[in-house]
Image 1: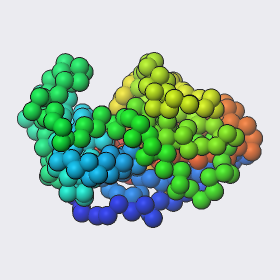
Image 2 (image 1 turned 45 degrees about the vertical axis):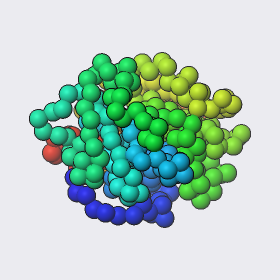
Image 3 (image 1 turned 180 degrees about the horizontal axis):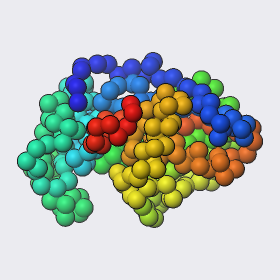
Image 4 (image 1 turned 90 degrees about the vertical axis):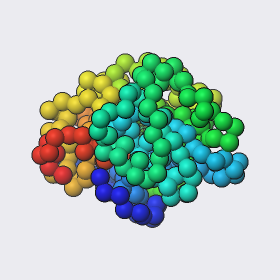
Length: 301
Ligand SMILES: *Cc1c(COP(=O)(O)O)cnc(C)c1O
């Protein structure tokens, strides 16, 4: 993974029209909000979720940001890059024993200055912080940026489309539900949010999302059948779909989140889930660095 110091380019965000038969034949207009273009490492929704945590750290004069994630976490790499950018020391508490060779994500995070602290899976699951890191002048950011601060940041995503009013649906992939909570916060009454969970049987998701949004509007649907085996799992069918999507649109997706989102939305459209005349905005939430864990030649992009 190449590390290029580069500004976060919100002006690089585009809305791309997706003209493919499954949508065209049903007269559904689909656009993709390209948050993947803002930065090679701090990609997609991770910047939006982090922005107010970083602001809070500065305002409260915190000396260090502490966060959590796995060895392939998009949140870890984005946090390392964002803290580097903001000159804020940071520590990543990483799930599992220290491996003999670091994943590309952890290698990059480390070279961006993040200190890595490995804890056992049991302690990680119990959210047990090493006591020396639990200090008043440290800002603790939950895994994935989950929290009201993260959702407030994610609500800003919709400032970056041209004609927010005109959409009938917003679509996103879901991990923690923070981005979806943000979209629900930002949308208007006549608009629906379609969320695709990338985990298997994540039954607590809906409550976790609502915790970020006490006045959660009812106009949303959550779909749990597009996980392809579970978090970060994939099948040949998904890989084939991602390659085909790239051939037809020229837009790369990642196998953990956005590939599953595009597959699900195409499948739902084919099953006439969206009425004729719908106008969808799908969030391309980035995450492309995760594709580095696939074997060479798996993807054509
Ligand atoms: C983290 C991530 C998500 C999930 O966002 P949540 O707010 O945790 O639901 C979706 N897409 C990509 C590419 C991500 O990296």
